[in-house]
Image (cartoon, rainbow, N blue to C red; front, top):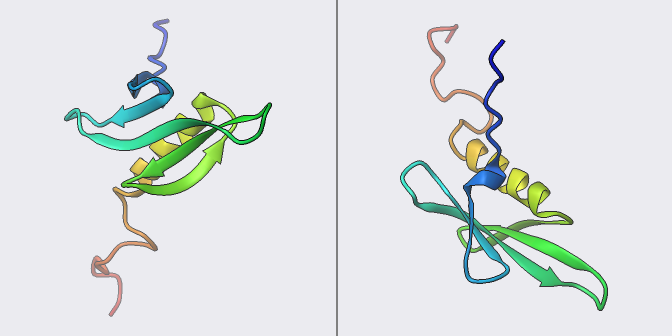
Length: 90
């Protein structure tokens, strides 16, 4: 049996400058950024932002990429259900 492709948002992350990653869509447009930040003398965190707005912090780059990609996918769907009634009632 052929192995399934295991695509992960981390594969879409491109680093540059050092400590900053950009996630790109299918058209090579940046849809979000991740920045490595020192929050104390011993702790590092990844700052996740979309269009300049911070949407969260993560403890690993993998989790930061997943969070950013999930937000990207949510931005493509309806918020709170379909706009049209699709003929179901009123």
